[in-house]
Image (tube, rainbow, N blue to C red):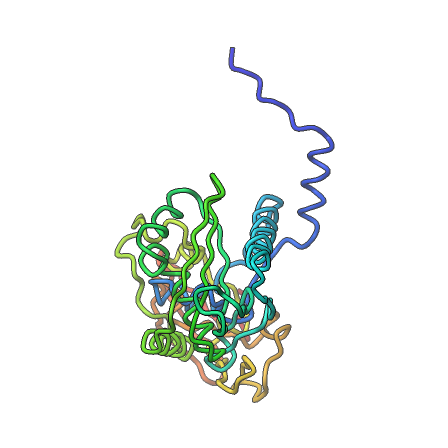
Length: 311
């Protein structure tokens, strides 16, 4: 006889349900600083264009995020313990027309190795295997995504040192590291994001095949490979363009107007997909008068995209 799985208590179910109801989706306004070090330009572009459904924040993910916030404060308290001044938590950093955005964990003065030098503080926690890699090789090699993120923070704030703090989730070991500003690296990373933001079509993908291990956890994979349609809203529409005015703005050429965040999410009946987003679709006709584009789907059927099409 198969073992009977343990039941979940009514209280636990109620707690999990309450956590789920605190807001179940998350989507960045632009390119989050944590994505600046991603290898795949196409992944960044599709996320910026909001091609896939928003990330669902389950009760488990919510607790993981909360644990990260708790650990951040614990690490900052360790600096305060040795009389280091800490301030500026969640100060905003913006670049690339305001579309590249993030928040620092804090600023510090009184770091013992350089007591008169202001530092950006970056706080992280990691599982044992990642922690040991960072401790052995340093953050630049051990966790290059973190390195790229805080180099952007130094670029945006003018502070030229980071105090990087990582704790081991398994055994509470600690790794502290002072990292200098690499202007060439940071400028290249910001320029890369600006280039991706201004691309009218998605760049080529990093992965050469669907089961490439590099795309295992990519949230854009289904849209990227044409398994699902991109979401229909302003950011997937060929009429919209991101503006580099510093306020993360978007413009609609069809209606000759700037687009609010709510308008971007809602879209309008005149929506026309950026053709290159429709993987495997062959464009066979278009009508400027009717504002339509006709396609042959991968299965051979015809589909008309546009204002007069009922879809």
